Length: 366
Length: 265
Image (tube, rainbow over all chains, first blue to last red):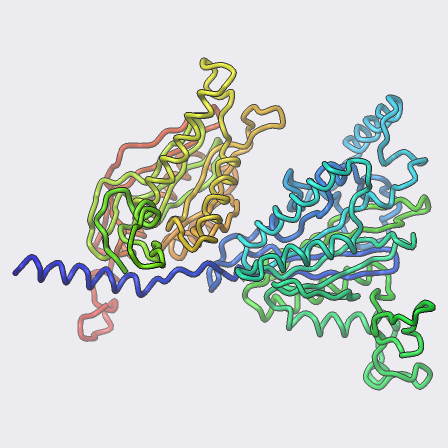
């Protein structure tokens, strides 16, 4: 009698525990990623805060599953930063360009705030000279025809961190398998990566990857070296855009970036002109393309009705993105701590060499 | 929900369920649980701390349960959450470590073929993520501590500290805390942390945090263990010991610190 009563109490209390904690396979770990496509550059940016899905901050320096390279493991490591190549070239800009470093799993390593020193630059070039002497091809070799294809395609993802990590591994596995099967072919272009990502995301339509992505890369199909940005939802629908963002706080960031880039693209700061357009341009939105100009080719196919690149320098673009993130960090608790911008340029100097650089900004810590 | 008392923990229970109903019932809530694990990097390695209590709901069920465990010669894990799942995960990792050792080129060189902490962490992420994708999770938050490997396979000087949770979220940091500790201890540790802390300092900080957790977390105990991994590749786990407590703080003695209310806190 007594024992059955106490058993009932035990079962009752245990049931009370279980109803309080129900298993949820998803967690929204915050994070905001953005990407901007320019005429000869593309940039991708992420904050480094990872939350526990609520008010708690798991880590203030999480970048592992946020920005990663969708180019096979072997190809991206040789790329150089303009910071290490020429100190004088970038000295007029106000940004502290750092060389991009990659983790073994292809994710962008968190930049450390140490400036590139000249002694290590010297050793790096020395290694290059030795490689040239031994006949191996590498990036410092001017005769290499496809240096531009060496720029990696980068993916930024935010949402459920465990899903983002798994998505990263799935996509990179596909790319490594592709390289194994077709070792002579060059790495996938940005458009192919964009399609691959759509396939992988939609492949998990039943239990979706809760990760919101942007893809950023240099489009080499017509050899212009133009930036290309694609923005996704969790189940794989996507679109090519000039400025895209994804993750927690994207609703705050997107209009801010739209506005900032529409100003930069016109090169005007006058409110009347921004709101109502100048009389010469005729339409209000600088990013929209009139119907006549959308027609393309003999078959009469249509280009997108909006421009897919912004019309400003990379310095302005970095500045706009930093301002946008700082604004969002003020109002969205899941965004903060640090902003990491990764910049790919198809022509960074007179020699038309591609480069990869990283710039870091401080964001609100609380 | 079934409260089967079959041996083998919730993991086995869920897998070997032969219920006549078409749907398999999985563990979707923990039963016997351990609370926080705290971890911090210091000058010459990583320190872990946890108490030795395992609760059954609100009952303090096992008071000498060890939740800091070495799984090979240079990697430690600390686990909170369902204790049976922790035991099953540890067994899995030890089985892997044994296999690594038996398939090594030399049986005399212990570290030759071992997984480093980062590899263990990465493996655990895959295990946890697979289980959560089957909606049959291992209900644990696991802290992995040790050192990273160099490119040539030798253990490097760079300490590693990472966390994997029950849905496979994995991240590294200099300071980590699970469970209730992530609310109470983590901010305190963030405030006091320096990368060049001496062992004594780091240890004192962890003990202070454990003591505060004992004051404030109803599922915590002042019987604790501290464990360390050091640069020379050694794991040491202390025997459980008791922390001194002090209950004469004004805020503890006076109800509402003297606000003259009905006596509640």
